[in-house]
Length: 170
Image (tube, rainbow, N blue to C red; front, side, top):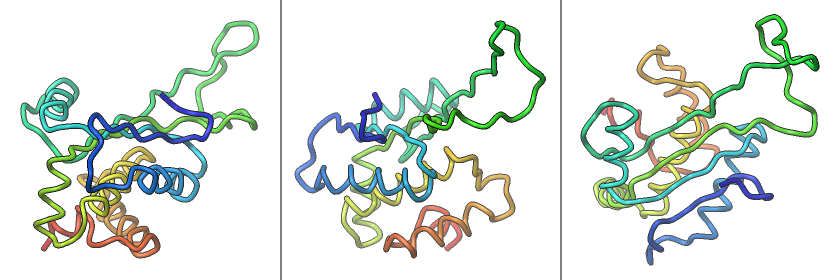
């Protein structure tokens, strides 16, 4: 699903209230700034699809606003076909590793945008940022506020309204 331009955004249905090109530019901005050049793909779909994904991959039979699916890291293989000693390896200099995929519920984004007084497009950006932070390894459920602080810093830098973690706390 990745394009030569990097991160992609796929809409199941073209929403009239969202500027597709602006959302795609935002995805590439997140790729460059938050993901440090690593690409991701974002699907914007309906509640039914998010519910199926949530059930299949998280065991939760309910729709949700955003899901993140980190790219599995393949085990390194030496030239002779034998895996070298375990441990991190630097990526090939010409290839930035792909982060993974994000899925966003358009109906949830619309409802949350109305509830919090901003545009659907802004809410999609908030959800996309949240998803990318998960893809880079952050987990607000277990990191003592690290992800919340990072999300707040990025939101301010990117000119976004309150994020998901802040809403839960208030």
